Length: 405
Image (cartoon, rainbow, N blue to C red; front, side, top):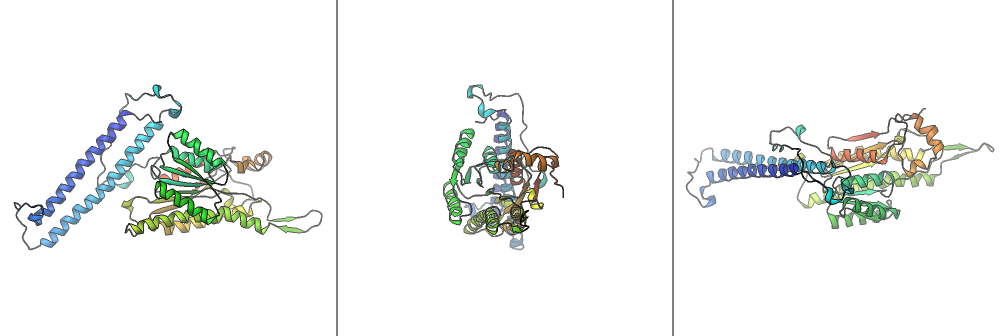
């Protein structure tokens, strides 16, 4: 497990102590304002009442000012706690191969010192606040479809590594059960849970969200990564007969159902659950001080720019761009961010199915890195989109792939 450094723990405790004292000071000042205008409020009559003239204005100005300070301070406390946990996790992850090291060899003491972070104040600019690699991930509940292999597998592992409370692994393959066990063994805690089914099945989708919410709490991260390819030219001419045949309509529908419609509805399902939860708690339009409520990251592709032999796949991935752009405008009302990442050719079973000859001839020569992208690199980029609330819209992780016309 982790081997957090003692100075980091000391820093967390010191920061919590400092902020608790400041919070107590604000509450005492708030109470003093109340008793100033209503001496009998606390059963004490030793405070002389304020003259009636101007009482209303003075009273409400004072209360509003202190209440606003209190609300802002609570938000800053949350950010300070998040920063402290980031330092805690980073300190732990900084120990090489810590999960593989026998417990007796783990050294808890170190001569390095970490100065206690200064408590944030209401006047501190938001830009100066720590973001950290686990922001919007730590202790959150995530759903990843297509989790049994490729990018879905990589991002599931990364979310668990970064401290997600639960990662629901969704796939049609039984391999998803082995992956859940692997993640749980690796992290030393029960974080991954497998659910097998068809992502295009509406009833299955709802069951997954219901089960996740009942067991772990509301889902706030959704990465619908399930996808298929059925590549063929849009129009093929038979060399012998001269007759042209079109890409099969049923195949087109199948590809767009899996790669376009299903991901959109998994994303919308999460937004709907968050919206209902907020309504039940009497909340209306999301405000920035509430912190981000959820994140959807769709899996696009460089094929959305057009790619020979991928008419259906390219259409599906291009369609996700419009879905992400539209949904994010609507979902932010409830505090949910939506974005899309466009991976290049990644070393996954889907890419490998194209064949070594095809990759060497049509892919690698036009890629700046001259290699396939590692799934872990895409997973890191996805977690970056989730963690950093300033990142919106589209993110290209294509390794510099620019195919010829």
